[in-house]
Image (cartoon, rainbow, N blue to C red; front, top):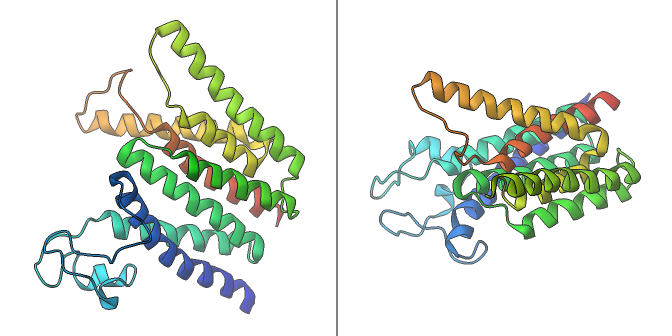
Length: 251
């Protein structure tokens, strides 16, 4: 019983810390700034932030989302990413307590970083996608379900399916309809989930996208077929619940 409570709490706390790093990565990396070097500073007054300003979620809540010195608003991306990372860790610890849950949480945190970068900058860095793929292969080699053979088929199928769709769209329409990072991301997801779950992920991603469009139309926002959409983020959002179901149902 103690172990069942230990793992959700541990992964939630770890998620808060990793979420803080992910938020920093999402903000700094597209700007060409170092993610690991340089002290955190207020964007308003450039004051170096101390330890009391950098406690994930707690500092933002106590300061009401503003700098204690100048009162400038702190980018809400920080606490939002941190909160999502906490939920990812908590869900993994509840679904599959133990080292397998830790592996799943890592999967979710990497997906979070990719999704956030796709939403904010329409960018799926190859280095981050490759990390996701390699960690997926490593977890399969360690014996975590699904079997490594299923993962390898999933990686090839995921990449190949979206690459063919993107190529067919470009040939028939004469324009790019999908970013080059999307097939790579779907292939990396396949290396985690195996080939059997890929149709579920694709369906959930499409359903989520349609729901977002529908909400936008209800709020009076027009939508066109050539509007850009962060499809990679939709794939990431769909992949983590699919993993929870896959491992949780077998636990």
